[in-house]
Structure formats: structure tokens, C-alpha cells
Amino acid sequence: MSEILDLPIPQQADKVKNGEISAVALTERALSRMEAQSGLHAFLHVARDAALAAAAAVDRKRASGAPLGKLSGVPIAIKDALCTADAPTTCASKILTRRNADGTGGSGPESGWRPPYDATVVARLRAADAVLVGKTNMDEFAMGSSGENSAFGPMKNPWDPTRTAGGSSGGSAVAVAAGMAAGSLGSDTGGSIRQPAALCGIVGVKPSYGRVSRYGLVAFASSLDQVGPFARDARSAARLLEVISGVDGHDSTCADVPVGAYEAACDRPVKGLRIGIPEEYFGEGLDPAVAASVKAAISALEKEGCSVHPVALPHTKHGIATYYIVATAEASANLARFDGVRFGLRVEPPRADLQTLYGKTRDAGFGPEVKRRILLGTYVLSSGYYDAYYRQAQKTRTLIKQDFDRAFTQVDAIAAPTSPSTAFKFGEKADDPLAMYLADIYTLPASLAGIAGLSVPCGMSPATATQPALPVGLQLLAPAFEEERLFTLAAAVERLSFPAGPVLPPR
Amino acid sequence: MMLACAPLIMAITRETVLHVAKLARLELGNSEIDRMQKDLGSILEYVNSLSELDTSSVAETAQVAVLGAPLRPDTVEPGLVNAVALSEAPRSAGGGFAVPAFVDE
Image (tube, rainbow over all chains, first blue to last red):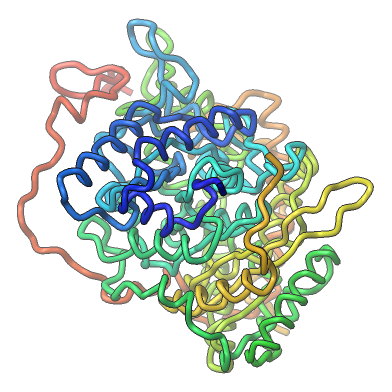
């Protein structure tokens, strides 16, 4: 019998609904896989007791005859940047851990901050009868593209554990790719869902800015951050997005726009859709194996009746500089709240003054990349440099957005690589911040423009003497709030690229 | 092409790093100051490439427009009770967050 945890989410929910498997049994399978694959370090916290209790509640609800939600009994993992009232939340940072006055606690994730509330997306998953199995590992404060910035050690790629899973939502991608959870949530500020999805061979969605509530998401860059789902197939991701989307009184940046029929969109034909190919995404630095896979997927869509058109996104090359000014400026302000006063770590030497408390707490609590970005953000906002850096970056952001606005007058969606390479080795870029930033070159512009994006597996790179076959992701982009188009195209891509169903990593 | 602003080929000095670190309330160790000086220097050199764009007639985008930008009804909802708000405080006293004395600073 095929493993139930590898089935699409709607099928898992149906099996719980019609009594083929209990929610408790499904949760136990997820927990045992999490234990068997703990070496991948996808999780910072395994919510064993809470998950089993939630599953038992779903089973009782079913026994009582009450209607079950759209995710009945389905095991879902949550990025540790999202607040959970019943589990620690650390953002993979030591600054959100603490040692208690009585000496208990410590600097590990289990000593993490306990939020007094659930993020809206977490509450919506619970309301849909999902079972939350744990909190996933990530780059500290979502800053990174490899997982190597986690204060608790990186997560590993299930296709090759000597390689990174991407980042920052790497743990959420690994949990799904390795079959430990049916789906997961991550957050994407400049590619943090799409890139790890591509490197781990699963579907990852960065919804339009304003599509999903950020209430309870630890803020990194507020004009860019979006919460979105990971799953092994488009239909499963669609169901998750339907559950978490929609207006929220706790987040005034969450738009009052009707939630689309994303799951139904997976069944629509792609015939007649106009697809734009930006040459700027196929230039120098793109791994030929990635290019070949992406081009093959686009040709397959063309054979299905899509029309393919070149589009120009001339300001693409300025995306990285623009992003690293805008995002670090916003981060330097957002991370000011971690001051050692109200929660988390405090370093308070005897007779220290308040400034010393702030300075020592933040020095001890933040890792090198977070400090680097706080310093950069503080610098570009500081007196004398604001116009040259921050204001100029905001204007360049307008030009990048206008590129997309123009392209979408000619095409319905854009297709391009998600990442310039397949999964890279640990240490390969870790000592060079700029080389790491370049890994996000294809995902940053869509974040700056606030449009909808998705990465779907479109093939495997050929195995060579130095590396096994590794997944390649196709990035699909659509105008804001046109996520339905992305799901229609993504469902076709997975059907055409993997006719025998999703390819799973070795277990 | 007219430059929108003068290119900023300014070296990041140790003093600059210390000044920015002070603004950001980060007490860096010595070796870290050296590392940040080098990294910030190379990142700023890279982002200086934006100065080649003429943006004199371009509006700024601080945030993409939020459709609807909904407001909720202005009604009283329960907030955090004091004990819960203080439950994660490193140190609390008298129903508040305890910090070192700072009035005389």
C-alpha cells in the first residue's frame, strides 16, 4: 500500500473524514517519520503531545458526527517565525531563548519564547482541523538562503545531506520533501519559500502582498513579508492557501479581496494562456542543467496550447541591490524590539545601565548575518546616506514594479528559473555574503513588486560524478491576486514533467 | 546620462562601523568589528551600482498598495492581561518590566 503520508493533502483529509484512517494514526506516522529523519534537522520543536491531543480531538469530532474541516487530521509543520500559543517560537535565534532566574531553561530552541497567541494563519489551520506537528528550522530571523544562519545548526537537503535545503524556510521545505508532514507554512521576503521549494523538489507559494495575514509572523521586512504554503503537489498547496488566505481584522495590510478557487484552478486547461519568458532570467550565472529543465517545461506547456512570448524586465539586475537596501532598512527597525526588556534573552551584568543591557543582549542574542543586516539597514537610513541609498532604492523598486506591470499587459504569467543553481554544498557560499545574496537573484524582483509567485518542480538535473540528480524548480509569476493562474500552470507542469507522479527523495 | 546622485565610493572605516553599531545598540567584539567593516564595505560597493540609474522623475515605492486596506470596527476587544504580558519577562517587578535605573543617565 502506498504510504498515506505521501498522498496529496485532499486525499489524506478525505481518508480521515471517511474513517479509513484515524487522525491519531496519521499523526503517529508523521511523528515516527520525524523521529526517523531527525538527522535532517528540519524541526526545532516536535509537538508530539499537542499533535496527538489535536488529532484525538479531530477523531472525537468525527465520532460525534460534526462536519470536519478541509484539513481534517492532516499533519502540517510551521516555520518557527510564526507564533504558536502552545509551542516555543524562536525564529532560530538565541535572542528568543532565555535562561530563567531560577537557572532553568537555556540557549536551545526548547527554551524558546512562548507567544501568548497564535498567528492568524496558525489559528486558521487549527480551525480547519489540521494537526500541527512541530516548528521548523530556518535561517535566523528569515535572513539567509541556505539554512546555515540558524543559531541551532542548519537543516539538510533530503536529496543529498551534504547540501543545503535552501532558505530561509528550509526546515519547512525539508519536512515536506522528506515526507515528515503533508504540508507546511513558511514565509517569503525575497525568495524564502520559492528557493527552498526548488532546491528540495516541492511546490512553494509566495502569495501576493496582502493575500495572507501576517498577524503573528515575526516581522523581518514589513513591505515584503508574506506567509505561504509548501506541499508536494500543486493541489495540496492550493488547499492550504485557500485555508490561510483572506481578510484579517488583526492585519490592516491583509487585503479585502475574495479568496480564489485555487484547488479548482488546478483542473483548468492551460490552453490559450500567454506565458512570458524574460531573457534577463536566463543569462550569465544560470546553471545549464537548470536552464535545460526550465526550457523543457516551457516547451511542454507550449505543446499543451500555451503561447510563449519574450518579455523584458530590464531592471532585474538591480533587484539585489534594491532588496538589500529596502529589506535591511526595514529589518533594522523591526528588530529594534529585541531589546532584552520584555521577552527573550537578557544579558544584564551587575550594575549595568540600560544601554549596556541593550548592547550586550543584542550582541549575545543575534548571529553574524542578522547583525550584518541590522548594521547595513541602520547605515542606509542614517543621516547623510538616506537619499543616496534608501530613497534611491525605493525609486528603483518603482522601476522594477513597472517592468512587471508592462509585461503583464502582454502575458498572463511569467515563467523562469526559481534559483540559478540546484542545491549547493554547505560552506560553498557561507563566507561570502554577496555570493549568498546572488542565490536570490530570480526571486527578489517579484517580492519587491508584491506580485504572486510559485515554484514547482520541473525536472531533475542529471547525476554527475560529483553530485546526484537534484531537483530543479520552475518559477511562475502572475499579477497580484491572480494566484489561480499559477495553480493552473503548476498543475500542468507537474503532470507534464512527472507523469508518474512526484519523485520523492531517497529515504 | 546624468547621475541622479553622486556615486558613493566611500570607504567604511572602523569608526563608521562603531558609530552605526552604537545607533543599532549592538556591542560588537573586536574581531567582529573587523569582519563587519570588510563585509559592509563590499556590500555597499555592490549596492552603489544603483547610483547609475537616473531616477529624477521616478516616484518612490515604500510599499505596494494594499487593495481594500480594510479597517475593522472600532470596538473594544479583550487584550493581554497583565500576568500574561509579563509571563515571558526576563525580570518583572510591581506589575511591570524591571530594567536598570536610567533616569540619571
